[in-house]
Image 1 (cartoon, rainbow, N blue to C red):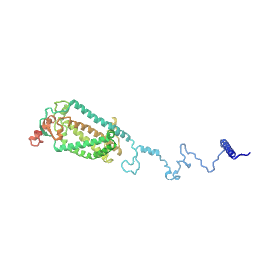
Image 2: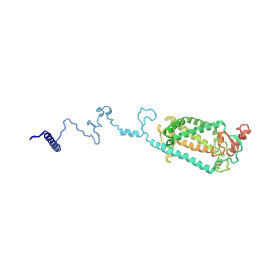
Image 3: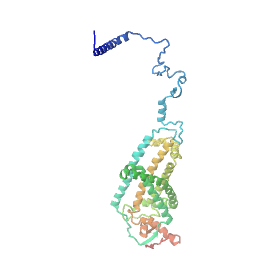
Image 4: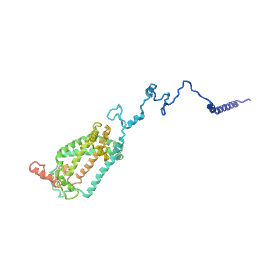
Amino acid sequence: MRFGRNGSWAGALALALALATAALWTAPEASAQSSVRPPSNAVTNTPSEPGSAIPFDGLPSGGADPAARYEGALAPRGAASDSEMWRAVRQGETFTSQKGGAMGARLIQTEAAGWDILRNRLLPKWSLWAIGGVLALLAVFYLVRGKIRVDAGMSGREIERFKAIERFGHWLLAGSFIILALSGLNILVGRDLLLPLIGKEAFTTLTIAGKWAHNNVAWAFMLALAMTFVLWVAHNIPGKTDLKWIAVGGGLLVKGVHPPARKFNFGQKLIFWSVMILGASVSASGVALLFPFETSMFGSTFAKVHAFGLAEPLASIGLVVPASVTPMAEQQFALVWHAIVAIAMIVIIIAHIYIGSIGMQGAFAAMGSGWVDENWAREHHGLWVEEEREKAREGRGARGAAGVPAE
């Protein structure tokens, strides 16, 4: 049979396809009927026990000396388990680390999740509620009671209420506290309230400046706190006279009621001791934050709670006191406590500012010029006026104790 050039190529292609089809058709049957025998030196890889892994070279990972077969990064860890190691990491165990510091050897602090919720969600919310609440109460009080005025009217005669050193200590304390309160509130709630209003760049600049002021003005606050304590502690010891003031609510709720009081009435004594105690506490926690991992204020306190057997009674009312505190937890306790005490002080000082300014006629002059109207002094601090007049008769009283004309 003769083929042309094109016919020859077509015939060859058809023959090749036929041979390939025949090979594929017969291959499964031939495979089923064939028997493959391994070489005589082959190794049978059989697990020594259920569940054991077989490495690529056929040796079980639990062999007598697996390290002899591997070197470097491929060397097995023997009985060590990565899952056990990471479980220990998650539970807060410490390891050998090249990083310095008290927390350098600890990778994960699981309990910090609760702290994060308290610090970033609950504290800002509670703080705003507390501040908003006291402002609302004062607004209602002002609408109901109005400005507390001098019932007898201003006399035109003045008596020295506070000396220059006392006013200096007061304003140093007040001024530093206002700076600390504003900068601290910005750190606590500024990202949610202020950032959307002024933008990222302005907020960043303000926060950096506020942080610097907060860290440095704190020392002026602590100095003023100690100064005012020394100046006024003798006048703020509670006495029997305070009971009469308490019985009538200081005359704040009813017009024409003026309970006896010395240099400081019971309400002012409450302010004084609140500021001293809370101020000392916020200062201590602030120092712990300024010098991280250098103090153990909360760890020592909690240890004493357990030593005196108070942990179980507190736990029965839901207050669980840990027996030990890690360095990081110490800082977290300090930060939360610092914020709580500071908010309490802000609430108290807002009420103090109200009564010393728009809430009471003639009150601001006491810390403004240091001199107050004689009738104001008689109505709010009658016993103190008598004491100063007695001293004036003896030649040792304050200037104007007998009353001098106002300029």
